[in-house]
Amino acid sequence: MHLAPEAPNATVVATVSVSDMRERIRRKSRLKGRQPEEAAMADVAQLLGPRPANGFRRDLLIEYLHRLNDHFGVLHDRHLVALAKQMNLPMAEVYEVASFYHHFEIVRGDDAVAPRLVLRVCDSLSCSMAGARELLAALPERLRAAGQGDVQVLAVPCVGRCEQAPVAVVHQCPVPQATLDSVLETVTLKPNRALALHPSAPAAINFDIAALAEHSVPVQPEGISPAYADLAAYREQGGYQTAAALVNGEMDAEAVLAAMEDSGLRGLGGAGFPAGRKWRIVRDQPAPRLMAVNIDEGEPGTFKDRTYLERDPHRFLEGVLIAAQVVGTEAVYIYLRDEYHGCRALLQKALDDLRAEPPCPLPHIELRRGAGAYICGEESAMIESIEGKRGEPRMRPPYIAQVGLFGRPTLEHNFETLYWVRDIVERGPAWFASFGRHGRKGLRSFSVSGRVKHPGVKLAPAGITVQELIDEYCGGMQDGHELYAYLPGGASGGILPASLNNIPLDFDTLQPYGCFIGSAAVIVLSQHDRARDAALNVMRFFEHESCGQCTPCRVGTAKAATLMQASQWDEELLDDLAQVMADASICGLGQAAPNPIRCIHKYFAHEVGEGPWPGDLPKPRNSPLVEQLPAGGKP
Image 1 (cartoon, one colour):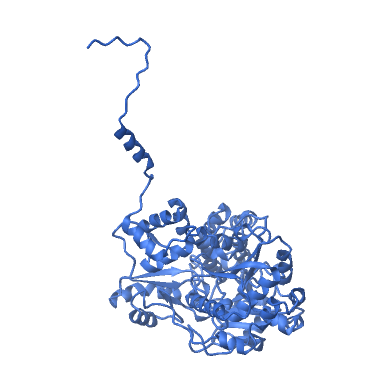
Image 2: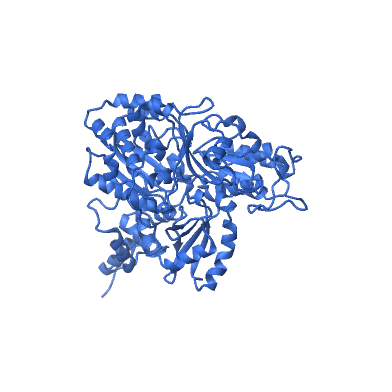
């Protein structure tokens, strides 16, 4: 057959078969990147349960990560891929959230396995003073000798049991006043994750917080799981009557709000903002309004919220109901730190009991679980975490009272602030304001730890001095110890010398001295400790807990910790670093981190080669806290 010649400029069109086109479509339709494995998809589907009609909620990502982590002991990368597929999220988004939180360990490869047990030993200030470092140094060898070498030992920041220092945690089971023998005994008795859980608490008591005003909260012999007031015991003592009267319209919301304002109650998580004023601000915002409760009690030295929660959860929940009704919030989200495993079980049971026998119509309440990030104690970081994101603080304005959780006006409160609401409303604002010393008003729950005979939560009048607190509430200093220094507000509140033992402890009284009360965590040092070592301990804590979002905090805390190890400090360089951190950090972590540096320069210059030893301070000796002695110097 004769074919006509092609035209010189003719376009040649390539022919593609139907099968070629189908193969090209198949290739393009395949997802790029790692694809979920069938077995991993089945694992995740089983743990997440049936798929909701609208799909899995994005804000529950951290809860789903906990389910995987609890079941497998670690987060396998294959399960993260499957979880991303199930939630219709980018893998990068799931990974960046999981990798942010300390309690999630991501492992790669099919051969990766979780340790049989993880043994955590707190190395924050109070526990370090009580011998945590020696415990950490000796445990690996002792475990190997006992045939328990497959137990992973980790040094971790504060676990919120400073009055029981040093503290170890075998998986989820705390070991107070930990020794090598007691830790090994716990590991032997609880050899796997299924057994090493927090013991259940007995419900056996009526806990009347008002009766403990100006007293210490009793230490119960159960220690780890003290007896608590369940719903029946709480209601027998008039519990939920006030909340029910308010919700049912038998009590005036404006009168309750006025009582809160007149009481002078301020935010007891550390910020100290007047509670009644906050209620009024949020109530004036457009609906729908939400409420977020902060029980991420991570400040080293603080354990008051845990102490109250594990004894009387319903008093807190009644405060929640009252606040929600007065402010008009439609839903409540309670954020509890992951280290409080016993409190989580207790609070979940209290919520279940309340829903089964409601005293009045209840708002929607969700209990959310943190994942080991101190920064989530900052209110906007906590809100980010509740939304299932990395716990990074937000820039302000807008403030969360205007644009908070899920973009709605949000009332944010600390646990203890809400814990006092019922008693203030029922007893009257004058009752709460009637307490106080040295011109201050109200009650303060001091978490006291360190070199005192009787550490614990002390419900003392606002304005009490540290010397009065030690002498009247703590049985004095431990034998052989005398007051050398103290931290009035936990790791971030600064350090003061014994010569300033007469300052009233309250909001606004410590700022002239370069300190603040914060959550009222008082850590007491003696002549066996050095303030510079305490400062370095807390700076290392800040370095570990910085979210990394802003450079001044992320780099500044690390650089400061390095400089603070020198026998003689570079005062000018550290001061410059402190100023940059305070001025340019986004949130309170970076802004408060310089406080220990400044306090050492101001009150303990003799410890860092910047001045002679003052005559009003005892010289330290035999310190278990020593990080590094000055070269050629004497302690």
